[in-house]
Length: 312
Image 1 (cartoon, rainbow, N blue to C red):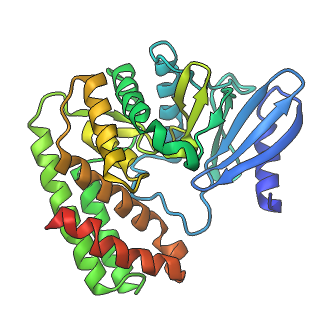
Image 2: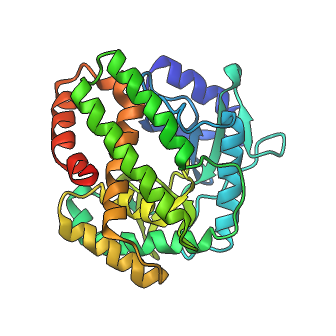
């Protein structure tokens, strides 16, 4: 943990009536996320302070504190409805759930859910279960209307501007930028088609990566709802499938989602949102990684593979 991370963690913990015995950093991406152990319990502390170069401006259509409050409201909403364990928010000294640190940085403290993260080496055997988990999450969140990001046509428009900027800054080349824009065109068409289908929209987790799924005694459970928002069911399936390389896992996700939810997911729609997931990563991270060789090699692989398949 860096000195700045440590300072922010200590400032955040001062807002809660706990006496920590051990603090360990879990990860630092869009949030500083720590495990807090006390004599009586274990917690997760999340401070909204993105890693340098990690931009969330595309999704932050409301102040960060309001978005975190919306996440808290979602967790409380799910707690009484979801068939999986939920990380319950903990009140601060003022009785609220979101504390604001110096510089306007919001943070939250959540109860720890016992379980082990889904490891990449075991993930293939869980593809079907994850599709079913996504369906259960969508069912449990039905009716929620709090402040969350919107994965919508407007987001596609903002992403277009970000890719134009990435090209002007030479973070990606013009050929790659054109392919990315063509994929966004197709995603926009898919969204338009889904807008006409009743029940196609849902509150989605939008980040069901393996590290955000715990294997608990009662089955897989999602954690870290910081990127959750209003989008499409096919989008959740596609973003989940983007964690896998093999078409057989993609199909297991799609089929298990359909069985659990009773809602049909078109393969092309799912594949379009797989590409959309990668585009969101590029848009959020190009400032951070554009000098890295692996990033440029990945751009070549994405634009020559998945992106071309989706955009035709």
